[in-house]
Image 1 (tube, helix red, strand yellow):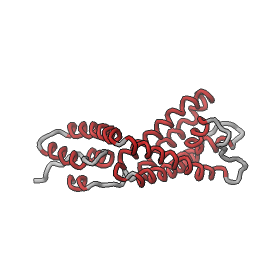
Image 2: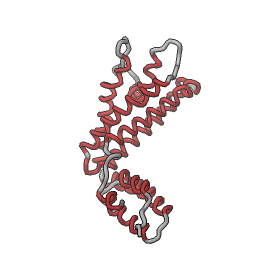
Image 3: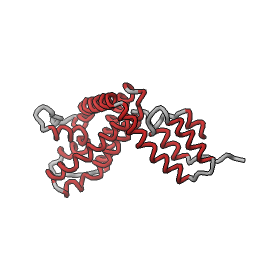
Image 4: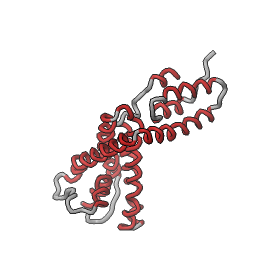
Length: 226
Protein backbone atom coordinates (compact mmCIF):
# COMPACT_ATOMS: atom_id res chain seq x y z
CA UNK A 1 0.00 0.00 0.00
CA UNK A 2 1.38 3.38 -0.99
CA UNK A 3 2.01 5.56 2.10
CA UNK A 4 0.08 8.79 2.42
CA UNK A 5 2.17 11.71 1.08
CA UNK A 6 1.97 15.36 2.25
CA UNK A 7 1.08 18.03 -0.35
CA UNK A 8 4.18 18.39 -2.50
CA UNK A 9 3.79 22.10 -3.18
CA UNK A 10 3.34 22.97 0.49
CA UNK A 11 6.40 20.89 1.37
CA UNK A 12 8.43 22.61 -1.36
CA UNK A 13 7.39 26.07 -0.14
CA UNK A 14 8.25 25.33 3.49
CA UNK A 15 11.55 23.70 2.51
CA UNK A 16 12.68 26.72 0.52
CA UNK A 17 11.23 29.59 2.55
CA UNK A 18 11.22 28.31 6.11
CA UNK A 19 13.91 29.97 8.25
CA UNK A 20 16.09 28.68 11.03
CA UNK A 21 17.93 25.47 11.87
CA UNK A 22 14.81 23.53 12.89
CA UNK A 23 12.87 23.56 9.62
CA UNK A 24 13.86 19.97 8.86
CA UNK A 25 12.41 18.95 12.20
CA UNK A 26 9.21 20.88 11.51
CA UNK A 27 8.91 19.19 8.11
CA UNK A 28 9.30 15.79 9.72
CA UNK A 29 6.72 16.55 12.40
CA UNK A 30 4.21 17.84 9.84
CA UNK A 31 4.74 14.81 7.63
CA UNK A 32 4.16 12.51 10.60
CA UNK A 33 1.00 14.38 11.61
CA UNK A 34 -0.26 14.22 8.05
CA UNK A 35 0.26 10.47 7.90
CA UNK A 36 -1.72 10.21 11.16
CA UNK A 37 -4.86 11.40 9.36
CA UNK A 38 -4.36 15.17 9.41
CA UNK A 39 -5.94 16.91 6.41
CA UNK A 40 -4.15 18.61 3.54
CA UNK A 41 -5.78 21.87 4.63
CA UNK A 42 -4.18 21.47 8.05
CA UNK A 43 -0.79 20.87 6.41
CA UNK A 44 -1.12 23.97 4.24
CA UNK A 45 -2.28 26.07 7.20
CA UNK A 46 0.69 25.00 9.31
CA UNK A 47 3.04 25.68 6.39
CA UNK A 48 1.75 29.23 5.87
CA UNK A 49 1.97 29.84 9.62
CA UNK A 50 5.47 28.43 10.04
CA UNK A 51 7.13 30.55 7.35
CA UNK A 52 6.46 34.03 8.85
CA UNK A 53 6.86 32.79 12.44
CA UNK A 54 10.25 31.20 11.72
CA UNK A 55 11.34 34.27 9.73
CA UNK A 56 10.51 36.72 12.53
CA UNK A 57 12.11 34.48 15.14
CA UNK A 58 15.32 34.18 13.12
CA UNK A 59 15.58 37.94 12.45
CA UNK A 60 14.85 38.87 16.07
CA UNK A 61 17.47 36.42 17.30
CA UNK A 62 20.17 37.80 14.96
CA UNK A 63 19.47 41.51 14.60
CA UNK A 64 23.08 42.50 13.86
CA UNK A 65 23.41 39.88 11.16
CA UNK A 66 20.12 41.01 9.64
CA UNK A 67 21.29 44.64 9.61
CA UNK A 68 24.62 43.65 8.04
CA UNK A 69 22.81 41.61 5.40
CA UNK A 70 20.62 44.58 4.49
CA UNK A 71 23.70 46.81 4.23
CA UNK A 72 25.41 44.21 2.04
CA UNK A 73 22.38 43.82 -0.20
CA UNK A 74 21.69 47.50 -0.69
CA UNK A 75 25.36 48.31 -1.32
CA UNK A 76 25.56 45.51 -3.87
CA UNK A 77 22.34 46.67 -5.52
CA UNK A 78 23.55 50.27 -5.79
CA UNK A 79 26.86 49.43 -7.44
CA UNK A 80 25.40 46.68 -9.63
CA UNK A 81 22.73 49.10 -10.85
CA UNK A 82 25.37 51.73 -11.60
CA UNK A 83 27.30 49.19 -13.66
CA UNK A 84 24.42 47.46 -15.47
CA UNK A 85 21.64 50.00 -15.99
CA UNK A 86 23.76 52.44 -18.06
CA UNK A 87 23.82 49.90 -20.92
CA UNK A 88 20.42 51.37 -21.78
CA UNK A 89 22.10 54.58 -22.89
CA UNK A 90 24.94 53.20 -25.00
CA UNK A 91 25.34 55.30 -28.12
CA UNK A 92 23.62 58.33 -26.60
CA UNK A 93 24.78 61.34 -24.62
CA UNK A 94 22.45 60.42 -21.74
CA UNK A 95 23.61 58.79 -18.52
CA UNK A 96 22.87 58.31 -14.85
CA UNK A 97 23.90 61.21 -12.62
CA UNK A 98 23.73 60.72 -8.84
CA UNK A 99 25.99 63.60 -7.82
CA UNK A 100 23.39 66.39 -7.67
CA UNK A 101 20.18 64.40 -7.44
CA UNK A 102 17.56 64.36 -4.73
CA UNK A 103 17.88 61.19 -2.56
CA UNK A 104 14.43 60.07 -3.68
CA UNK A 105 15.44 60.45 -7.33
CA UNK A 106 18.56 58.38 -6.68
CA UNK A 107 16.51 55.58 -5.13
CA UNK A 108 14.02 55.74 -7.98
CA UNK A 109 16.86 55.54 -10.48
CA UNK A 110 18.30 52.50 -8.67
CA UNK A 111 15.10 50.58 -9.41
CA UNK A 112 13.16 52.14 -12.25
CA UNK A 113 15.83 53.22 -14.73
CA UNK A 114 15.18 50.16 -16.96
CA UNK A 115 11.57 51.34 -17.29
CA UNK A 116 11.80 55.13 -17.23
CA UNK A 117 15.22 55.48 -18.86
CA UNK A 118 14.19 54.50 -22.40
CA UNK A 119 11.12 56.73 -22.13
CA UNK A 120 13.36 59.73 -21.48
CA UNK A 121 14.92 59.23 -24.92
CA UNK A 122 11.60 59.71 -26.73
CA UNK A 123 10.42 63.21 -27.48
CA UNK A 124 6.88 62.07 -28.23
CA UNK A 125 6.18 61.43 -24.57
CA UNK A 126 5.63 58.39 -22.37
CA UNK A 127 5.47 55.10 -24.23
CA UNK A 128 5.44 51.39 -23.49
CA UNK A 129 6.33 48.66 -25.97
CA UNK A 130 6.91 44.91 -25.59
CA UNK A 131 10.63 45.68 -25.45
CA UNK A 132 9.93 47.84 -22.39
CA UNK A 133 8.86 44.71 -20.56
CA UNK A 134 12.02 42.91 -21.64
CA UNK A 135 14.19 45.67 -20.19
CA UNK A 136 12.00 45.91 -17.09
CA UNK A 137 12.55 42.20 -16.39
CA UNK A 138 16.05 41.34 -17.61
CA UNK A 139 18.10 44.14 -16.06
CA UNK A 140 16.51 44.10 -12.55
CA UNK A 141 16.70 40.30 -12.64
CA UNK A 142 20.47 40.49 -13.22
CA UNK A 143 21.01 43.12 -10.51
CA UNK A 144 18.80 41.20 -8.08
CA UNK A 145 20.63 37.96 -8.74
CA UNK A 146 24.02 39.55 -8.08
CA UNK A 147 22.81 41.25 -4.90
CA UNK A 148 21.02 38.16 -3.60
CA UNK A 149 24.10 36.02 -4.24
CA UNK A 150 26.31 38.36 -2.21
CA UNK A 151 23.84 38.48 0.68
CA UNK A 152 23.70 34.68 0.70
CA UNK A 153 27.44 34.31 0.26
CA UNK A 154 28.30 36.34 3.37
CA UNK A 155 25.49 35.04 5.59
CA UNK A 156 25.28 31.34 4.83
CA UNK A 157 24.19 30.21 8.30
CA UNK A 158 21.13 32.46 8.15
CA UNK A 159 20.68 32.51 4.39
CA UNK A 160 16.93 32.01 4.09
CA UNK A 161 15.96 34.67 6.62
CA UNK A 162 18.35 37.39 5.42
CA UNK A 163 17.63 36.81 1.73
CA UNK A 164 13.89 37.05 2.42
CA UNK A 165 14.52 40.18 4.48
CA UNK A 166 16.45 41.85 1.68
CA UNK A 167 13.90 40.79 -0.95
CA UNK A 168 11.11 42.18 1.22
CA UNK A 169 12.92 45.50 1.64
CA UNK A 170 13.33 45.81 -2.14
CA UNK A 171 9.65 45.05 -2.73
CA UNK A 172 8.54 47.55 -0.09
CA UNK A 173 10.83 50.22 -1.57
CA UNK A 174 9.25 49.71 -4.99
CA UNK A 175 5.80 50.11 -3.46
CA UNK A 176 6.90 53.20 -1.52
CA UNK A 177 8.17 54.90 -4.69
CA UNK A 178 4.73 54.68 -6.34
CA UNK A 179 3.32 57.49 -4.17
CA UNK A 180 5.93 60.19 -4.92
CA UNK A 181 6.03 59.14 -8.58
CA UNK A 182 2.26 59.48 -8.91
CA UNK A 183 2.32 62.87 -7.18
CA UNK A 184 4.91 64.16 -9.66
CA UNK A 185 3.59 62.75 -12.95
CA UNK A 186 -0.10 62.07 -12.33
CA UNK A 187 -2.28 58.98 -12.60
CA UNK A 188 -2.29 58.94 -16.40
CA UNK A 189 1.46 58.45 -16.66
CA UNK A 190 1.41 55.97 -13.77
CA UNK A 191 -1.21 53.96 -15.64
CA UNK A 192 1.04 53.85 -18.72
CA UNK A 193 4.03 52.55 -16.78
CA UNK A 194 2.19 50.40 -14.22
CA UNK A 195 2.79 47.15 -16.12
CA UNK A 196 6.54 47.51 -16.67
CA UNK A 197 7.06 48.86 -13.14
CA UNK A 198 5.23 45.87 -11.68
CA UNK A 199 7.27 43.53 -13.88
CA UNK A 200 10.45 45.25 -12.72
CA UNK A 201 9.54 44.82 -9.04
CA UNK A 202 8.72 41.14 -9.50
CA UNK A 203 11.92 40.55 -11.47
CA UNK A 204 13.96 42.27 -8.75
CA UNK A 205 12.56 40.03 -6.02
CA UNK A 206 12.82 36.92 -8.18
CA UNK A 207 16.45 37.71 -8.95
CA UNK A 208 17.25 38.05 -5.25
CA UNK A 209 15.61 34.70 -4.49
CA UNK A 210 17.48 33.02 -7.35
CA UNK A 211 20.82 34.58 -6.45
CA UNK A 212 20.26 33.83 -2.79
CA UNK A 213 19.77 30.16 -3.60
CA UNK A 214 16.28 29.87 -2.14
CA UNK A 215 14.79 28.38 -5.31
CA UNK A 216 17.41 25.70 -5.84
CA UNK A 217 18.22 24.57 -2.30
CA UNK A 218 16.86 21.19 -1.24
CA UNK A 219 17.20 20.06 2.34
CA UNK A 220 17.65 16.45 3.40
CA UNK A 221 14.20 16.47 4.94
CA UNK A 222 12.62 17.45 1.60
CA UNK A 223 14.16 14.39 -0.01
CA UNK A 224 13.13 12.18 2.87
CA UNK A 225 9.51 13.30 2.81
CA UNK A 226 9.24 12.33 -0.85
